[in-house]
Length: 156
Length: 284
Length: 109
Image (cartoon, rainbow over all chains, first blue to last red; front, side, top):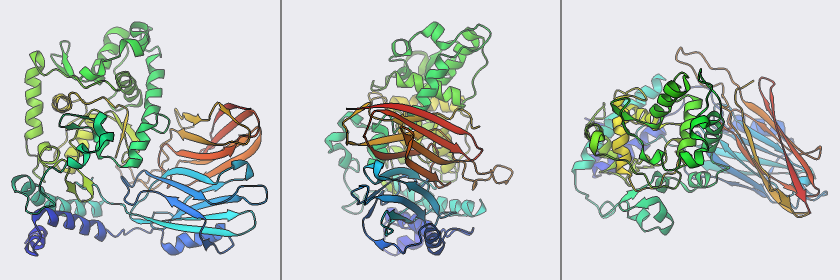
């Protein structure tokens, strides 16, 4: 019995069954290679930033569902006056289910004027982007954002 | 790779049943009835991306992808236009000429040209894409070797020529000597193929605006090609996209630049006659 | 040296003193991740732009360290405070040691 018929028997019409079937496949596609995990991503961040970060001040703006996982635009903004006394020194970005967790690290200083960076990244599957901002006073702040990555409609 | 193949086989089985059923059945729920493209028609920001019933792929893209296309700096396709400009002015071949030697300033000589392609080319006795025509110019007038399809210089030149028609309506002819090739392209478009046993029309005519998974199916228009495709992370031709589409339904593919894809290109372009050329566009 | 790596930068030509302006950069580069395999099943070696450094009249103003998770044809935008007229200098470093450079003048009044 084909999977589509099984789903259809549960009272869904064919179109709904197709959508569910594809969603199920995308979810079941657990990678078999070694990959980043939330633990390894956190470890990479703590290697880079010794201070335990607090939630806040950092905003991650990106797509809820990636148009395509190969090119996902991301904007990171950190709430900071960027003065000589109070500025963002660095922004570190990791992904917790890519083949490797590292994404990028940006160094800023008061000459930056505004703590905002934009870039385009690769995402192998649905996962969290985690950003940590290191401040001039030694404090660290963090935010996390999930991006859903699907296989294209035809498996392409 | 084997893991992906298994998933593709399973996906294709489900898809084959789903899509084959899709085109023949009547909507059974209120969510499903009516015009799935209505949401786009109603949006005034899309007026310039439509022509009657026809809708550019821009309309189906996410706001972030649209923003990437809207800004000439952020559009990675403009890197190809830059390459093309350099190539246009580069002397190549035994005749010691560049494209500019005969055609001068592309902004003048190439304006309105790309939107008439593909067209019947007497030197080939069949249709020519812009790529074919560029190579005819190179071999006959520059005494330079042909550029390989999808190579950086040919993609650049195609992008550069297309760019000179940006904003102009697609305007291909399907009568006269082009007619028999148009018919072949139409037949290709309407023929079921591949393991999934669907035709181009199943997705892009009968189900445009509906979702396949989370992907909203477009009308499959070509007015944005050649395009920077996010999935490819590179700039590519329409024939590369045809190849991808055929692979995705598990059908045999044809070589880029083949008669099959060139005839198909004319049919697809005709489907979009009136839409404004957006090349180089950004697509998913 | 990767062939035909073309950096593009967008810097406003003019700015007011103290104005915070956005700088956009785009460089053509395949950013070979080191994850892909060729038709023979061999891993294609990693080759990416791993760093972009920006100076403003010689002083470092921005640096990005990049990993293979950055998409091909890396686009990076950031901000600077316009303080004086002069030169913005950009350098992209490739894994193979090549450095791609670009400069842009800015007038601050």
